[in-house]
Picture 1 (tube, one colour):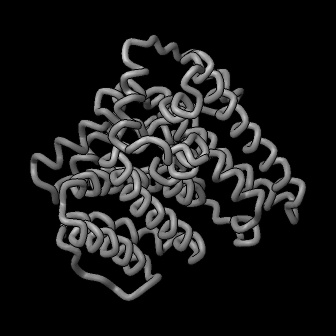
Picture 2 (cartoon, helix red, strand yellow):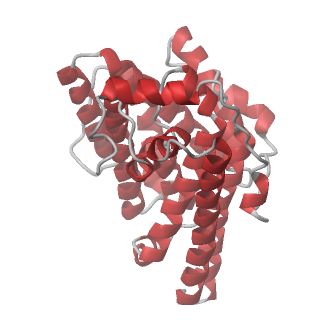
Length: 333
């Protein structure tokens, strides 16, 4: 039976929050899960704040403060510690843009449905146009976000093959539309099954667009025969799982404070109300460990199937970026 069929939405979330109230959540050290994966902080980190200020110049003070408070400079420094200055600068601008986009999407929760849908369609069409993947779109009602992404897109088009740009656009589109579903479920007070939540979380976390930028960060474009292979798709998917579930563990208290039950801990507890929180956490940790193994196995398969040593080296470089994204997320959190 579907996990959402036997309770009204408001009762589902209310009962779940009541069951979790007052229970102790113990999060173990997550670093051992990531084995010997590389980690670090960019040597130029202390210059990133000035870059953030530059990237936010086109925004009003309130918007600037909101985005700066999320420390995009630290995120970029932890996610791409080995990328060169020019690349990490653009990646930092992208993080700023996605953070701003996230705030805009969140503000649509109380907007008229038609207005909200039009904005989501508009931003996705604009991204396609800016990346030369569709007709140019000049306005969506928020010129600030257009200005930011136009600069990013112009730089990406000079360096990235068309299939890489398509993957970025597809990831942004999935992220934008999945947040609409997330907000709808939150408003309704719906608690998903863990399986259904798991599928949604890989999109709402916003990690997939960053994964799509890994080749740019590594200065190493990969052929489409690799990036469209099942092994590569499994690696990319697994990184989204690692980042998403790690964030779920570390942000659970904030989610509960906001009365949101769209979290792995809440959904597993909903599936099995008698499971202790320690066992819930253990389940999530097993899933993170499984995702780590999928990255390792996928990398090994891609290396076995590489056409020559140079291609194998390129694969290692890009997957190293994805591993740095995974460890960087834990450091940033």
